[in-house]
Amino acid sequence: MSDRTTEVHDGQLTDRAARTRDEILEVAIEEFAANGYTGARVDEIAARTRTTKRMIYYYFGSKQGLYLAVLELAYAQIRRVERGVDVEELSPDEALRKIAEATYDHHTTHQAFIQLVSIENIHRAEHLRQSKTILNENVTAITLLEEVIARGVRENIFRDDVDAIDVHMMISAYACFHVANRHTFAAIFDRDMLDAALQERHRRLIGDMIVATMTDGRGGPT
Image (cartoon, rainbow, N blue to C red; front, side):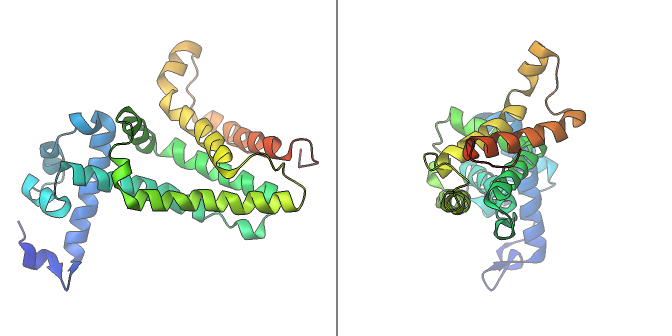
């Protein structure tokens, strides 16, 4: 096991240490998503990453510190996806559609993220509330939507009685449902919502729903 002097240089993690830390986080996301905060075992994460519990605690301080780092990484990934949508070159309705579709694509291909969100809701977000990083990152999601909606209202394309948090809620609800309710929905209706054959249609539906809601008969695209 490397000691502190070989893991850190000039206050920064070495390349090797950074790779080890990233590997730990990758495995930890799977472990926490599968077993929850209480059920996840740091020993299992250490075994799967060929490191030690002591080294994991060196990087993250504690099991809770590791879990917070996992949450921060998971939320940072979806925020990067949202920021990657170039809304400046799009009309407001098309920008809103692209944000909705990008969110759908992320959530349906990152099942661990949805599982982590569900776990945090079980714990009433007691861990998430401790992370200023997550709370600050999430502001960007609303800011982006606010900018698009405000532009649509100014151009008389969007209604003005629905705010960015409402829209974010609608997009998240639809996209999360596909993962969070996948197995019960399949048992009841014999339909796998993550079936590859359904994805293009469902992706188009979320865009249609959000644009239709916001244009509210104002002549938006059909």
